[in-house]
Image (cartoon, rainbow, N blue to C red; front, side, top):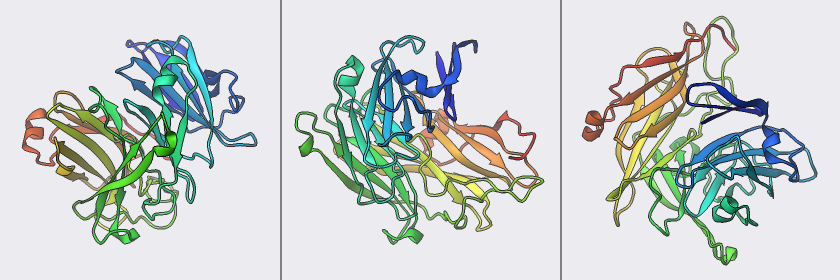
Length: 356
C-alpha cells in the first residue's frame, strides 16, 4: 500500500494506484483519544519497515492543552486497525518531523524557546501498551528564528543495538553559533527504565562548503510567473526527511536544504552524504549544490537506496517556469566516486500550469 497526506486529509492506495480508503479527515485515524475531535494539520506518515507497521501523526491544538496525536497500525495493512495515542506536549508542536529508530519514534518541532525534542516509546506503541514520552528543550538550536531540528529516519537495517537516536541541523555562520557553515549532529539517549536518566546533546559540529541561506526576512522568497507574490523558501530547515542507513561496516546520512546560489534569491538544493566508519566520527563523504540553470529549485527531499543510488525530488519555479516538481539523482557508479555530481538527467514529475 501507499499512504498520502495533504493538509489534514489522508488516502490509501494499492500499488496499481487504486484508492483503497479515503480521502478523509486525518483525525479519524486517532479514534476517540483526547484531541482527536480536532483536525488541525501538519500530518506525517512514515512506514516502520522493520516492524512492518505504519506511523501516522498530526497535532491537535483546539483544546486546553496542545497535543500530538500518533497512531501505529496493528499490521502492515493501513486499511485495518490502529493503536491510538494522544500525548500532552508542553508547547505547540509546529512543523513536527518524525524519525523511526529502533528504541523510539523521535520527533523535532518548531517551538522557539520551549520543548522541541521528543521521544515516544516505540516498543509499547507497537503492542498497544502504555507508552512513555521523554522531552527536551534543545539549547543548541540554530539562531534563525523558527526552525525544526529533525530526527534521522532509519531506512533498512536498524542502527546497531544501543545506538542513540540522532537529530541533525545546518548552521549558516551568518546566524552565529559558528565561525563557518556547519552541519550539527545531536544524540538522544532515551532510558525507558528510568526516563530521568535520558540525555540529549550536540555531539558534532562538521564544517561544510560555504553556503548562503539569506532570502530576506519574510516568507516571500521564490519568484513565479505573472504575479508579484513569491513562495516560501523554508529557509534554515533541513528538509524532510534526513535519512540514515546502516550498511554494516559503515553508516550513512543524507540530507538537504535550500541555499541562495548567487545572492539574487536564486534557490538551489544543497545536499550532503555523511559517512561514519566503525569507531569513527561522522565526516562529509560528498556534497553538492544542484542549480543547473536560472530556475529556482528548493523544498527538496533526498534518499539513498540499498544499491547506492541517490534520488532527489524538489519544487521548481522562476519568472518563466510555473511551480512544479522535478527529480534527479546519482548513479551507483558516480556514487562510488563520491563526486558530489548528480549525473541522472533531470525529469519532470509535475509540469506546473499556473502560479499560486
